[in-house]
Length: 515
Image (cartoon, rainbow, N blue to C red; front, side, top):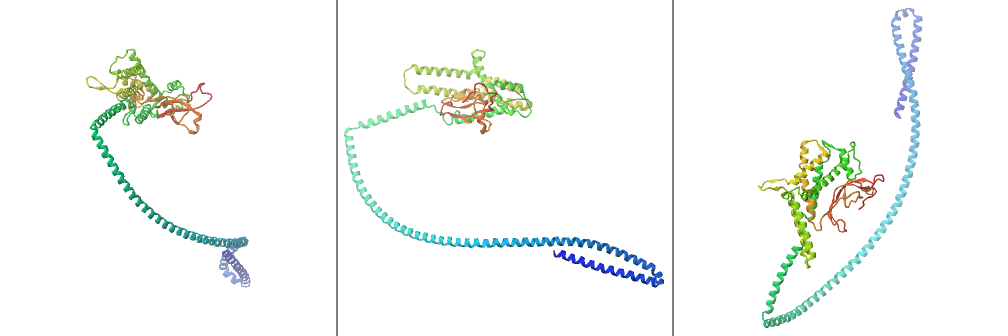
């Protein structure tokens, strides 16, 4: 604001100076005209010089006039701004006055509140001091009570110690009397035993011998009737569960993820999905590879397990000669025959022993335990050379052909790697589902679900927990494995692996299976 005033004064002074200069120039011009009129010679001699000076002065005068006009315009603008600023100044002063009044009101209000708070604080301090005084008084009372109680407890302890000493002395006296009486009775008993001779000692020796013999028989009976598998047994539930999970992983790797450098036979896969009654859609544009993978895993299990029946049929029709190739099947057949005979023997012969019933379980456990360990392993020929089991080689080759019909692996190295998994996969499937499930007592059970409602307690898969009520099993591609599956004390080893589908009134079959 002060700067504007200074500019305003400067411009005013400049304008006044310009006005004075203009007046002087006008006076000079008038004087010049008079001299020129009175002195023509002077005019003629100095005309040229004066004209030049006059022109210069006129130019300077014109420039000064222009500057004057500009300064005059600036002065007008500055004057307008000055008025505007003056107005704003008054407004600011009014605002400051109102703000000052407002602040004064707030200060007065705060001072009033401070006085009220100071008053309340004073009251609180007085109450606090009063409470402190009361607590100190109570503390002194409790301290006095504590001292009195400690004094009473010391007196009681002294009295109890005195009573304990008196009772100890009394007990020692009574114990001494009882000990003397006991020694006297022992001496009397020994004397009577000596009189009766050594007959009792002989009976004691005979009794000890009989007890030892009975213990041996009891131990043998326990071994004969114990069907519980040891923790180190490969068919123990924990190890069996781990092997099932390993088989699932091997099956997953064999079918592959169906993604890199691989062609799918969509038409044949669609037919396979129809055979299983699946309703999820598979198209060339949207092959739904995760679903296709589940279908192919189920197909592998069914295909391999189906060959076990084929082997039995070939043996029964005598198309295969019994020998090393059929040993596993022969052992299963003979074991089943033996178990039937023992069962028939137990119901047609009188007796109540536990060994007979337990023997059927133990024979089953031992036979299938052996088959689960060595079944379908490499065959040792008469010359000592080992080769792949003929049945495993046959099933593996057929399995690879079947899988290559549905999915074609274009990379030769990758195809060779995947095909080489087949023998181990086939062997593990047979060992697990043909042999090892019969070792547990009770036997291990397997269950495949079809069109059931989703049950997370029995199944695993990919779904939203909030939508379980809207889902059913479209395909179960690995069975539920456990014991007593249909009872309240069921023991689950591994959950069934399922691929779900949404329930739709338009595609639901007439008969739906529930759990």
